[in-house]
Image 1: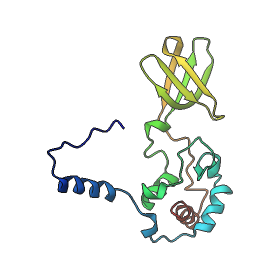
Image 2: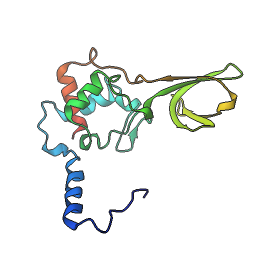
Image 3: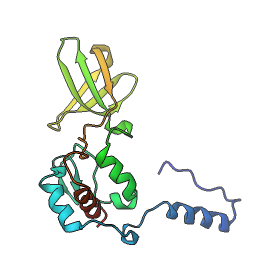
Image 4: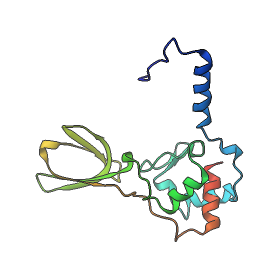
Length: 169
């Protein structure tokens, strides 16, 4: 990997303290007591919520949003609730959308997959990849809002609890 090794002079006890700290950052979803029903949440995920049109769980679903297969290990129930009800509050750069207009005037919009000094690549909602040389671009607009809708108005509090319980199951 690109990670540098720990210096040989670092005592073993310090290395194990570091390992213990890193392990403490993982979140064990089995230890979380939730109000919702995971079976009801699974039905919501694929039916009313239509979450699987964008999100994948255990290899099933869409690719337009983050894979949620192990979301319970990295996200607290509170943070997941915030993401469901207010997805624009914190959008990682990986999920920003770019609107790219070429010199021919044609505009394409999609997720920012890769960008460097000379080129940009986006993936549109149909999972098509588009590559552009920056010298051939008329304009680029970066949209930092989430493409995920807020479920604050469309799901009840108990349905949101069920959805969170499913994701942590």
